[in-house]
Image (cartoon, rainbow, N blue to C red; front, side, top):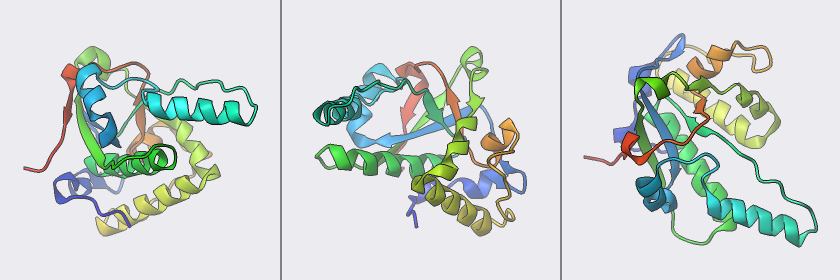
Length: 188
């Protein structure tokens, strides 16, 4: 089970029978190793250069060509969900990168023109195909239960676009976000 710090526990305020409420504020979870970069340059699409280089090196070592993917900036309307993804980022990085890293969450406040570009992440349907997706769905189901929001009921293969946002808390923006729109959250 995820041990979310109390200052990031917001599911009790956002989660209802129809899923997570959305507003003008979004969140992004990542590794503490990226804080200096994010504070200086903002959130970048496919922004973890160390992980991209490690993947490229690994693929070259086994003789495969590596095509770098260009992922959008992933967002969620919940600090609690962002913390979950931050833990996953730390876990993923620990396989390829040495160092003492911890999960961190950024608050993202976008102006209206950028806010309208945030989209539900329907690519989340691929969650059914990987172990990490099963863990996320179990984490979500527990959040729903713990916050008396009923059972998490979604068919990932047939769900409406907005269900990915409302029920799963998954969104993205396909552009970089400047540092003026992000703030590292901390207790206190």
